[in-house]
Each structure stands twice: as C-alpha cells, then as structure tokens.
Amino acid sequence: MNDLDNSNPKSESVSEIVRNNLPDFKIHGYQVDEQLSEQLDRGRITYLAREIETERLVVIKEWRQIDVRTPVPDYANYLPEITRLQQLDSPNLSRYLNSFQTPTGFCLVREYLPGVSVAELGTLPSADIRLVADAIINILDYLHHLIPVVIHQNIKPTNIIVDTETELAIYLVDFGLHPHAHEPHNRYQPGSIPTATEAYDLYSVGISMICSLTGTSTSQSQHLFDRNYRLNFQHLIPVNTDPKLIAWLKNMVESNHQPQYLDTFTDRGINPNRSPASVPEYPRADLQEPFSFQMPEPQPIVNWWRWGIGAGMLLALALIVRQFVFPSSDELTPAQIAKNQSIAQEAEFAASDRGRLIKENRCISCNLTNQNFAKAELAGAMLLQSSLNGSNFSDANLTLAIFQDADLSGANLSRANLSKAALYGAKLNGTNLTGVNLDRAKLVYAKLKGASLRDAKLTNADLKFAEFQQVDLRNANLTGADLSNADLSYSNLKKATLTNAKLDGAILTGTTMPDGSVHP
Image (cartoon, rainbow, N blue to C red):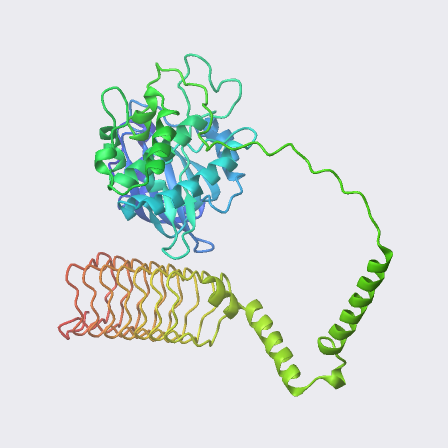
C-alpha cells in the first residue's frame, strides 16, 4: 500500500493512521489483521479485521482519497445508500454492520463469510454454472423488488462466495457504492454520471458465468467480445456444454448490454458521456397461461343405503384402530412397548444437537461436549460457535469443515482430516491433534495452548496471530505455513519442517527449534 503524500495538508493525518502498511482502526473498535485486496487507482482497499469487543471476524472496505489532486470521498454523500445496505435482510447476503469516517474518506464494515470465491474455483462445469446462476438470480429477485430498488453494482466471480463443497450455500458480497444511487429524482438525470441499473446486474451475472464456464479472468473478459461487442466465446467452452445454457447466457448479456457496461465490469470505469438505458425485460423462459376451462360442479346425488353401509364400515375400522394402534396402557405387549420407546428415542435424537448435525451436517452454537464422532464423515460440516470440548473426532473426515469460534478444548482430533477447514478463533487448548491433517487450514487467532500437534501436517496453513504457547510440534510439517505474529513461546519444534514458513513477528521465547536449540 502506498501512503499518500504527507506534504499535502489534506493528507498529513494519513501517517497517523497507517502503521506497518495497515491502518489503525482501533478507535472504531476494529483490529486490522491483513490487506485482502487493493484498487489504488480507484481508492478502494479491503482488509480482514477483527471486532475488538467480540473478536468476530469482519471485512472492512476503505474508500479513500486517490491522491492529493482528488477530493476526499464525501462520507455524508454516501450515507443514504449505506443506510439502505444496512437494512437488507437476506441469508445469502453479507450483512453490513457499521460504517465510519476517516481522515481520507470512510470505511464500510460487513460480516466475514468463510468460503471460497467462484473466481478461486476456476473453470466450472455446466451443472455448477446453473447452480450458481440460479442462486444469484434469486438474490437479485429480492433486491430488485425492494422499494426503492437496490442494485448490487459489483457482481463478479470474486464476489460470489461458496461456503463449502458439500453445503453449497452461495452468497453475494461487496456491493458497489455510489453517492445518491437510489434517489428517484436524480437517478437518470441527463449529464450526471450514469449509475448501474437492474440491467447491469443481470449483465454482470451473465458475464460472470461465462468467465467461470470458459476459465476467463474478469480483467480479460473483454476478449470474449468482438469489435462490435458481440459475444464470441463458443470456441472456449467444452464441446458437451448444454446448448440451452449457452443460449441463456448469451441472452443474459446481449439483451442487457450497454456500451459502458463492459468497461465497468472490468474495472475500467464508467464513461460519463454515455446515458444509461432503460431496464430491459428480465430474460425468462416462456410460461404458458393456465387453462381457463373449468369443470362443471357435480350435482349432489344421495344414495342413503350406500351412505349407511359406508358409515358402518368406518365405525368398524375405527374400533380396529382403537384396539390395535391405541390400546390402553395395560394392554400393550412388550414388543409394542419397545417399539414405542424406540420411536420416542428416535424423535428425541432427531431434535437433539447431535441428531441435527448428523442429519443436516450443520449445527451452529450447539452443545456437543464429550460426544463420540470417531471416524465420522463430516466433510463441510458447519459447527460455528459450538461447544465441542472433550469430544472425540479421531480419524474423522472434516475436510472444509467450519469451526469458527468453536470450543474444542480437550477434544481428540488425532489423525483427523481437517484439510482446508476454517478454525478462525477456535479454542483448541489442550487438544490432541497428533498426526492431524491441517493442510491449507485457517487457524487465524486460534488458541492452542498446551495442544499436541506432533507429526501434524500444517503445510500452507494460515496460522497468523495463533496462540501456540507450550505446544508439542515435534516432527510437524509446517512447509509454507504463515506463522506471522503467532505466539510460539516455550513450544517444541524439534525436527519440525519450516521450509518457506513465514515467521515475521512470531514470538519464539523459550521455543525449542528444529535443530534442538532453544531460542532465547
């Protein structure tokens, strides 16, 4: 990150809030951990941070002065739109939590959603394209039917998040933000910079899905068009791609296309000399009108003798049911008693936290202490903020599982597969992690005091700010792991592999190093 010119009076305060290339937002209640992305030419920087009071992970996006020749973004001018975003209520949108002014602009705070972006998933098959597109269209159906309409303005593969490979919950994050974008009287005023419309959102969905289908990055999406802005991507897609999907994607883009949209999608900005177009009809499959023909009402014909026989049969059936299904308690046979008890136990289990986890593969803020999940298949399980201390997960498959802020103190996770799992802020004090697979797992701010990670695989794991005091890491493989600012004091790293590991700012007081020496 390049600091602004401190010689300019308007930017003198920048040096006061920047330290070690990260801003200090503690006065607003946030500790910035790392920079996620930057668009310096547009004055946009995004950070991963933690709410100091609750230790909850959040994402902070900063709108800042680009350079001394440009004005500081007017926070008050954006407040109406920020307020609208904070009022959105959808389980598939990242909630906006807060906003605050800075000396060089302002920041917008939203909840952090663990998962991977569609951009990170690379080229997607047709079935996944349909799944993602359907989810995003449903989200837009909610936004575009609000009064006034809310436009996302920033749909692209990097802003579509998939939480796990098993649950496949899909989220839309990082709304675009423009001043007064939704004021009805100036939305399409001639001469003003055109803002995004519903058509732009739909256009962006189409382009995003084509990029994912062809393996094209957002910045290179202009190569999907010829000189006349006509789509030309068929040569890039698999030969077995459904022709209906191709036609639908082309319709999404071409029916909603305006000349400025491609430049905006590829982050090259909006041309202020072009006027926005009206919103075209959303492309949907043709629906047949329901039949208007109605069957005539039947005339009542009463056959009393048949009615009497029917009533008698119903009475007899009721007596049989009463005798065999609902007998009095003193008439129940041992087999019936056992069956009823089994039914009651199954119902109780289904309603329990354990039953919910087994059935739904998710249980948030659940109490699962001292449970046995040895060798369980729980890939992609969601166990955020759950109490799991003392539980047995030995040899379990927990790939891509989410344990954010969960309590696993004293649990047994020996030899478990936690590859790519999310354990942000998890409590693992005294936990048995011997031989565990934590390849590419996320343990930022995790607490592992006294834990055993002997023979563990931690290759390319994110361990920033983790607390590893007095941890047994003998023979652990930490190749490529990020241990920046982690506390490894008095831990044992004898014969551990630290090839390409990052130890910037790590605390190594009293730590036994791989060669057997003790760090001062």
